[in-house]
Image 1: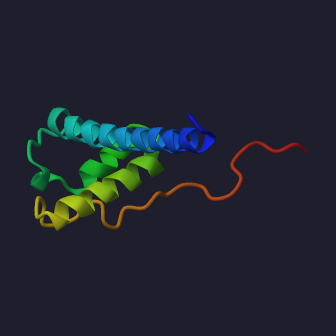
Image 2: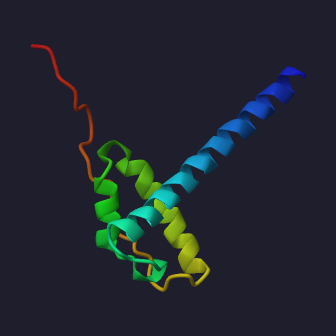
Length: 103
């Protein structure tokens, strides 16, 4: 295998991993909606459901927001849902350095 082919294979693996991670987030939100919120249809999802899902994992809030936004836009474009529940959600969090400083 040449170096170029190896780099191409590595790029595909990263892309596959990214897709799998996004699908895992969509799966997790579906399970959350079913188990925690008692909703069995995407059309019943609202912004409060997505905020509650994102609150369950503070470190993954931004990544979850990206995936939820992508999925919501996809679902709306396919007319699975009429309203995009992720529209208007923001990744609120501290900006800048948040660690400890030395005196």
